[in-house]
Amino acid sequence: MKKTLLSLATVVAAAALPSAACAQLAFNVGASTDYRYRGISQSRLKPAVQGGIDYAAGGFYVGAWASSIKWIKDAGGDASVEVDLYGGYKGEIAKGGLSYDVGVLTYQYPGHKLGVSPNTTEIYGALSFGPATAKYSHSLSNLFGFSDSKNSGYLDLGASFDVGAGVTLAPHIGYQKVSGNSDYSYTDYSLAVSKDFDGLVVSASAVYADVKRLGGVPAYISPGGKNLGKTGLVLAVKYNF
Image (cartoon, rainbow, N blue to C red; front, side):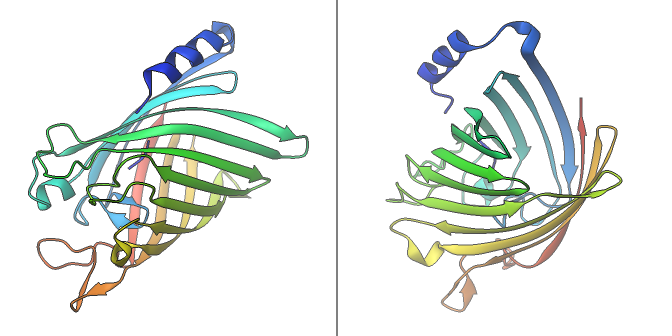
């Protein structure tokens, strides 16, 4: 799940954007053996296809991203696609590598037909220093279909190390607090290695979510009884252009 552009934020950002000469428009398309978000499979541990578009000018950025999913249908709904919209601002706090990133994002599931809407809006803020980043995301709505879960939060600690020859190593740990539904809170871990072949990025990630067991079964489970946070190797390919 990646990222409601608020109409007001869009207007303000557009009014403040620098000249077109400084703007950048980028696209990406890709596929993965499993769509894991915050450690939990969104595609029932099956492959997913994904793609997005980003526009940046100065420190401002907006974008959209989409992925195929299965969890809404597994929950009794009728959406097979997740659409994320986001926008924010990145800037430098001090010379030497200390920077920040703040923004708002929404995860939308068109035609979901669930009793409690899975559509989720979060605001986020991040600080980066060198290769390390700490980010906190706070939900302004219910979180992904959990009732009474407004003000949930996700703390994400990660890093990205360039180990040479276009290869990047990225460790990560995160904690998802589901407000009002503590049995569904959990910690997730991942370690990813990727290589960029002139815009074609291939990656392999070891992923795990330490979910609770409720009545003897994992808190996040597929219709077939599989733990959606189980340890797994996710292979992915993405082309940036």
